[in-house]
Image (cartoon, rainbow, N blue to C red; front, top):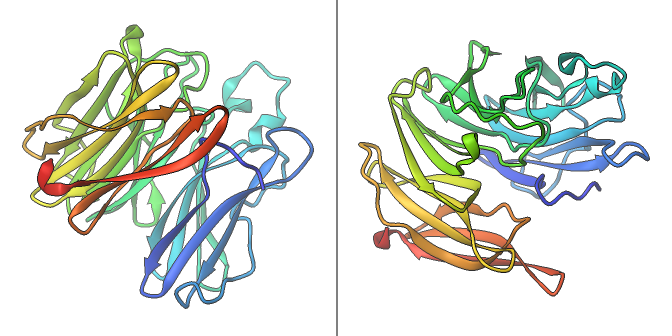
Length: 317
């Protein structure tokens, strides 16, 4: 397996008794030669299909940062695909840069709907997908030939991902990947996106909301400014609210994990400090379980990593 602190394996429910899972596996000797491996269960995890690779190329390059979603009776995947990186002798970033690609896997492990979604994106920022009433919406960090790396959204309509558009014109120029992807949630026509930017050397965690399936974002706010580190999480809450989580820089290379509830009308709640010893190389996860908001993160003590969790009562937000 290819083990990466920022690019984690996953297992997700895809419908009644259906589960989908993925991980990363080395494909060659070079450091970043690895593939996506996908498997599924049709009986609630009792048995699993033979693993397959959802990408059709055989290049020994990067493939990862996968987001999965239910696609009818199958599973859709969208991921960062580095197959063009074999063209490393060119100065043209479009000819040799990271791409965003997608495919769907049916219950018989057949691969369909293969698509190049974006021909040049940031090298190693996480992707995310949510299902709106119009269909799947995906968010990712784009990259222009001028090294502007802002957050973009693409919507899938009639089985095809549409050209991406920026959520906001942050204008973050950075000649390298910040390893800081966005998060998205959706319900019916409502879509919310959280992300981190450091445009003009001003670190900010932001949130934007849409009422038209992500076609436009009519409301945007700064969740937190100052010594913030990003690594955002986002989940839906009861009562037309969302909860955002992020890291804020602390002492001794440790960070605070914070969360805040935000109403769809724009009302911001108070920030809650969930943990104070989160490692710099941690991508905290957030979700709702019953009456609680649940968090999972990595801590590092004397070079030993450990997994920690906590829950915050929803009524406290």
